Image (cartoon, rainbow, N blue to C red; front, side, top):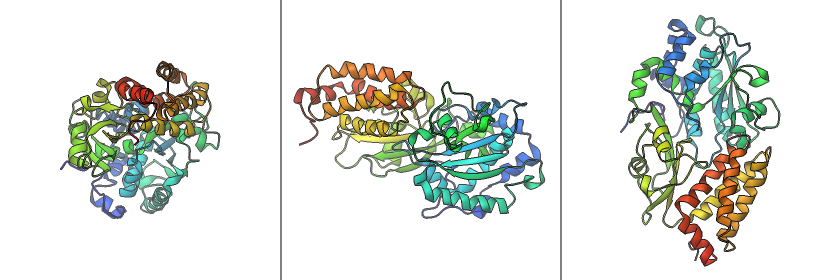
Length: 422
């Protein structure tokens, strides 16, 4: 059993209270920061710990905070993102229901580093229970003196609110999320401005995923070297919340050392595949990553390990498929989602994704032609000309289906039907 850092207070049927959080060392990091460390010192500790963003991009959190200039104008804002709508990804919801004060303390510390005056927790609308929990616990934190004016007698003041999303997947994209908070259409900005210079209401704004920020109190308390030592690989640091779903015995969210091999995640922690099932492929980091086949079953699940496989860690959401699963049908299902969730702002995404879906639908339903395959390759290449990462991410399952499972696609076309359906 590996040490539980983020999930150390996780209970089977309820959230951890503020007293339970404090008993485990909660709010000690905030006390230490306000009494002993300058914002620059906390920032450097996070840089030294190599805390990479856990929302999908993997950009180092400390370097993002450093991009807020010392002479940047006020007010400054801090956004904590809990808008996970990627199929197969549910780690943020689990975290909000496990230990909300870890989220609150991590957000306050990030606000302290960048001298933000206000924090906004951005929650997807279907996570209403998470929003209510966070609103209640924020009030409790305020009453305890951890939020508001001159926190714990210091010169630092910070307010925190919960903002419910309008409910579209595109709201998870940084610039679209900023537009959504301001009451505008959730379109990505092009070219994307650096939000740490011009974000909410053209003021400096830092946006981090919830899983990134919950690591900050532990780094402040225990140090950068301790945090790096939690990982299984030298290229990574800390632990990771891996969501596992699909054809496994124990689907769920597991906190494991960053870099834990895929085989171990599936066979030991998720209980292996269902009886009668054999591993065929998985999506290693959510719906916008590439299919990973048997040849990469022992890949180290961190940013560098998956990069070597020409793939991405993404959110660390492992969706497992067995030998009885039609990957053409699975890919069509994913593209249906992306077509529905596109904001329609740019041509490649608005026009290209429905075209890709139509070709896949024809292949799956016995109307496919061999000439569709090069067309799909070209259309997927066009997705990389879009305004944001939405369309390129949507194309990754399609590209990897064509590259790694071509025989399955050809079989659909030659048999004029899906071979997995009786």
